[in-house]
Image 1 (cartoon, rainbow, N blue to C red):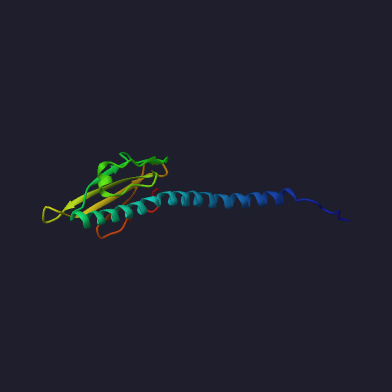
Image 2: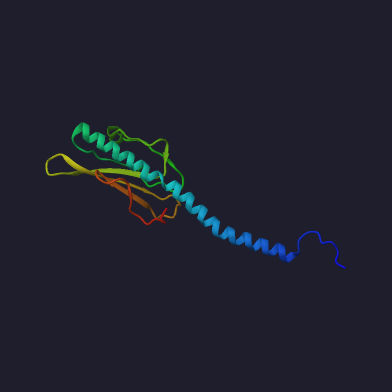
Length: 152
């Protein structure tokens, strides 16, 4: 006769551990990728804010202005404080707290002595691998990613 079995056999436990290992091997890289993508999401949001500030500056002064780069170097993994220079203050845009990216705006001269356009850029290296993700914008185009989607 068979006795009442209580508990699991070693084989059953090994199968469960193997399944958990496979799930972890799939889930952990995806989780890390989503975290990095969320950190990188700061760039287009701030760049669109800079674009709006440039348009407001143009409406008042009939020209675009230069500002940046700020911070002076591209932050790595840790966030750094955004310290607005006089140019950023004139533009009327500042980041709320610490940033993960470096921002810059360059006015583009037009046919007259006034500036007709601007090029905004934002770069970041949120995973600290020295490969920067980058976004650009201008008068007509909102923030657009220039680097590969898997670059953080």
